[in-house]
Image (cartoon, rainbow, N blue to C red; front, side, top):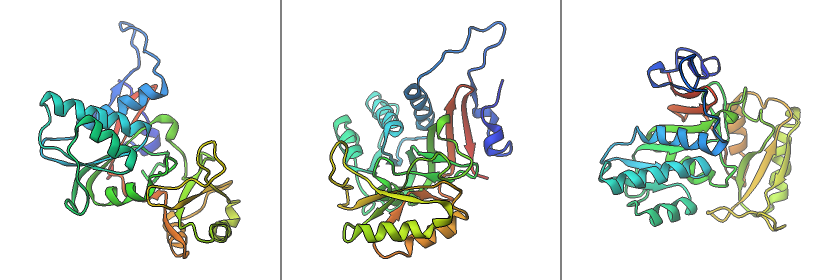
Length: 269
């Protein structure tokens, strides 16, 4: 059996008993080629196996987490899961969970979450993440910082050598007041990394995208490695006008990756 992605996270972290291989043998049929969305569903369903009756569960946001929410609802309705309380990380997830009949609450009533399941936009070899390209980074971070176990579900396209390495956005949520001033200050923090900031727009509109919290998002793009992540995080959060950033550093406890080699479950050492 092939072990998926041990070269990425390191062999000591990968739990081989939880690896599902799609590699064919001579006596087996050729592997089925799955679409990206199908891979997301495979990772999401694997994560839901960790959910137990009676848990308070953080419900993530995005195309991958949506599959996990669907599966939790299915298990609730079948009676295989009972007494689940969901803590949604966005208005979209709240609406999805309500439509599926999942009982919901919030961090005021449940300040300690048993388990959270969510996707990520990037995952580095140390299991640090970029999240928030869907716009829900603040609520996601609040819920996932309060959880005992944070399971990240991704397809293999999300694996990067360093955060920002995909060339795609690293989001920063800011207050709308004087957003251009804040954007320029963010760019100056990472001038040596060739950072360019852009105000996120709302779909086809030229109007700024507005988060669930009434804020704007600046998307930062890096040409080079931004350096030490904790230093970068501290520098961003020290800027007046910044609410939160999309780096989730040392937060994930488990990463589930689905790809052409199968599914790997990697636990933090």
